Image 1 (cartoon, rainbow, N blue to C red):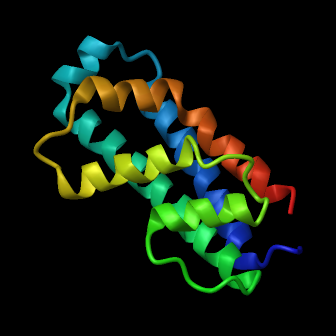
Image 2 (tube, rainbow, N blue to C red; image 1 turned 120 degrees about the vertical axis):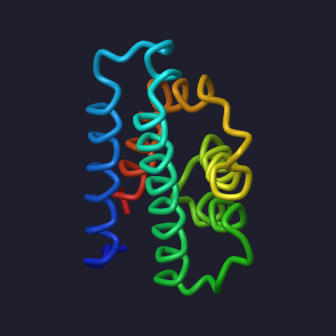
Length: 135
């Protein structure tokens, strides 16, 4: 399947988001991150946007394949597995749930969890991009 320009642009934005995360956190320890409200807010926002991009791409691919709309973001990820775009639903379902927590549970965000995700799980975004690029 040939990807259209919208998907390609979103993949480029996803790459930019990962680079932005790395830039925000370069040389930053967990303790520094916990004390820096502005940096925490920026990282949370970049993670939220990156997950939104993943969801948007999933929904676009589903539409391009004529597979009908997904009722939820989790279902969109599961459909990509069914359509053999992704090998498994994890860690992408975890991403969607994390995004939901940032958006809807904004007073209950654990800075250690945000730091861990931003510093150790950013490769998951690249794996998603690589899976989509193989279409």
